Image (cartoon, rainbow, N blue to C red; front, side, top):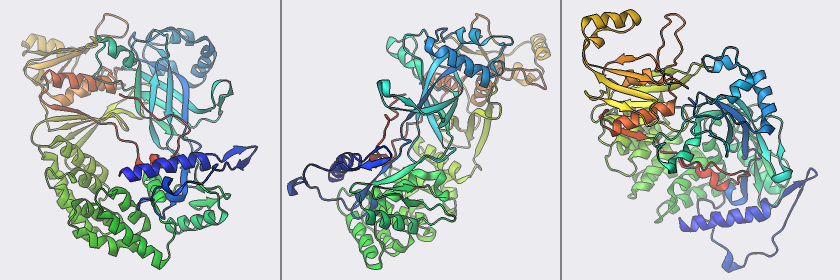
Length: 615
């Protein structure tokens, strides 16, 4: 592994000096050569997972892998916003709000409010929205968005905020040379997720409350350009690689996957079959062997098999070389299913399954997925989610929903969802309301699972809360007030008959069985006042609590009743995590770990800074 990291470091250095040194000037490319060749003692042996592959000769370059950003407006901040608007932004924001946003549709009680009054209200705040579109991302890709309040403004927190729709554009250059491209590359909008574990009473946490993340809040508006750039420009090599890529990834139509444009680079287009998993395509592309002759092909497959058995081998990367080569290498891969090295056996089976060997490789991964404590178990469970045609995995994955290890249960749940198996899952949508009526604010999945109750909350991608265990209860005695004093929850004993009748007259939707027994009362403080909302009465169950907390606070068009308190996704997650911590909900709370950067990015230079947000 150390030697491979050294190779990548040297490769990147060479790319910066040679590939990266090919800069565009007046529409032409110029080559900057190394001052001297490397001495023999400076050369590093090419690792077997890189040797003879496209990654040895090329690097991926995307002109779109740069920050896109814009100034926007967040609403629904409950007096935590700011009336300050930077003078240089006021004109643009005013035009934007007048032309694109119906303010009265975004928040309640704004009839007749002018744009200026709207911006000066402490329920709103000017914010900076930014994101990074990954290399080669196809149109429609969803990406997280970072949102932050500008410095030297009085905004105290973005919790509960909603970013109004805004176009994000690419900025390039620095200082006075900055250039903003007029064509938007992405549209951002949605609820702002603020770290639910922050305490507003702690000085160290207060600044972090001024920034948040919109999960999957950016929609990419067009296919992003991508190219392979040769480290040593060569017309012949460009043509060879173009032919090899198109041979491995054939598509119908005039536009091929690879199109050589010069001796410096090859333009790459994501194949239709990979648009939903373009990271995987880029991984395969970089690990594709450059030659495919019968003799060389077999030798390469055999070399990979030998390298697999070497201690500290990069098994994942080597297996990707096999996969990139295609079904022709299956005879070599199948021999490795029985390897005495468990890692080799796992990655061989993974490769075989991805190449279509469902009959032999599928049962191997199913067996590994069922071995408690095996370091390969979670990987096997995740891999089975990619293959709904492995029917023998269906029942084992359902059984794993009852595992003692909550990480195994979560992995099994995610695999079942990916396979489209909802036999053990009930999905509920929480209405967003406001200006995004067609989309849910978030979803709640209730999983039919035995054992300890677990609450799992996602913090990237699609906002979702997962409850492991049907009818998850709350404790019999509760008094809860969140740190911002926004939400109050307390238990209530059974009411006398006359009070039951009085309450049901005001809200016929309430069942007498709730009011005549012990129940829970939930309400919130209304924005910008000391008044409180309607009091909701629910049984001692977690799912009804989530529904009340997150449902929109506007009256229903048919019944005229207000369905909920309108808390944002991050606020609901924060309430649940604190209730678990206080034992008011006897469940283990698990917040999704932010996923690691895709391995392909190690070989992809970025022209903008990466997403380094720590929440």
